[in-house]
Image (cartoon, rainbow, N blue to C red; front, side, top):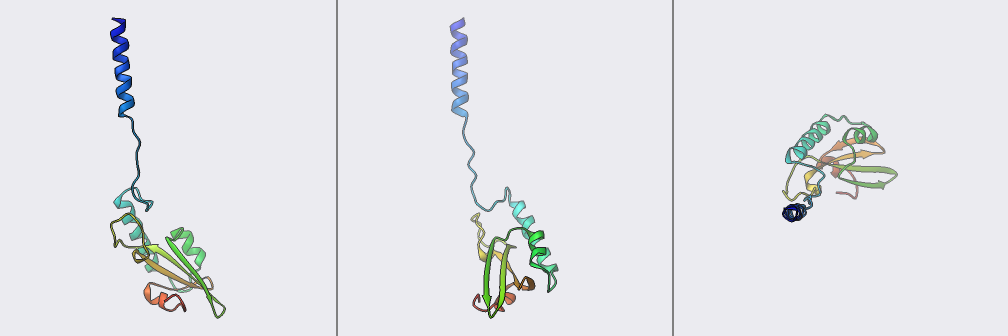
Amino acid sequence: MKTTRVAAFSLVALLTVGLQGCVIAVGGDGYSSSSDYRDSEQRNRQYIASLADGTALATVEAELGTPNFADLVTVDGVRYRVLYYRTHRVHADGNTTRDECTPVVFADGLLIGSGELALARVPTLN
């Protein structure tokens, strides 16, 4: 009887170990579900659309956080900073690319515009 209990316990232990595994997270966009990235994109779109010319770079970064991409260039003494925030999905591959982002453009730390038209105003980036 004792041998049967030991054998049964050993079998349960062996099955338990065999059933254990690891969880592998696929995708590198930092979102845990599809609604998370949609909520973030909508929030980014709404905030960017509400911005006024002259808004400080620090204000935008404080509200939207770290950009997905950023460019910095100084031309003729003007320091241009372009922050790219994800606002729409183009590829369902789990990665964020620049074509899924809206550029937010600053000159000497103050907002001069957003979107492709504002980006075209930056010498050497267009």
